[in-house]
Image: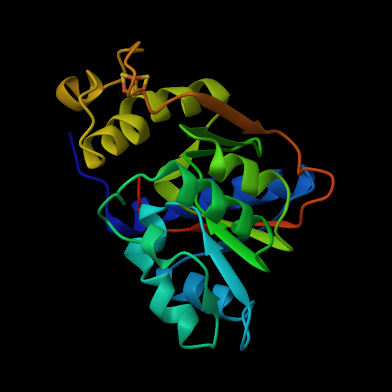
Length: 222
Ligand code: SF4
C-alpha cells in the first residue's frame, strides 16, 4: 500500500478539523482551529493577563504544550501546577476536594477532551468527576484543547477511542493494577481502582458556561 504524502495527511487533518469546528459552533460552543501548537499557545496567551487565575484539569496535552510556563510568562497565577506534570500526584482526597472547589472559581480553566466528534459533541471519562464537573459549570471561562488525534466521526467512534486509547493509556500512566494496563484495551473491569466511572457528553454548550474548544492540527495527548 502506498504511504500518504505529508500534503495528503495535512489535507485530511485540516478537512476533519474544519468540519469539527463548524459543528461545534452549530452546537453553540466557541471553537477555533489552530494548525500548530504554537498557534494554540498564542491563542491561549491572548486570554491571559497579569493576575488571571488559571486552573488545569489533568491533561497530557497541557503538559506537552508546556502551558504552565507559557501562561506564567504572561503573568497568569496557576492554581494547581502540580496537576500539569506527566507523573500522577499522590492522591489525598481532602486536598483534592479542596483544590476542586478552588478551581471552580478560576478565571480560566484549561482541560482537554478524550474525544471530539465531527458532529460537534465533546466526550470525557473521569474517575473522580473533578474535571467534568469543572468544565460544565463554575469557572469564568473554560478552554478545551484537543489535538486532531482526538477527532472521531461520531459518538460510537468516540467511545471506541476512549476504550482503546485514552483510558488504557491513562490507567498505565497512573500505574493502576487494572486489566487494561496489561492488555492495552478496556476490559470493562470491576476493579476498586477502576478509573472510568463518569461518562460525560456535552452535546450542546452548557447554558451558563463560556467554552472555547481549540482543535490543534497535530497529535497531542491521549
Ligand atoms: S473500565 Fe477498567 S479496564 Fe476499562 S479502561 Fe477503565 S480502568 Fe481500564
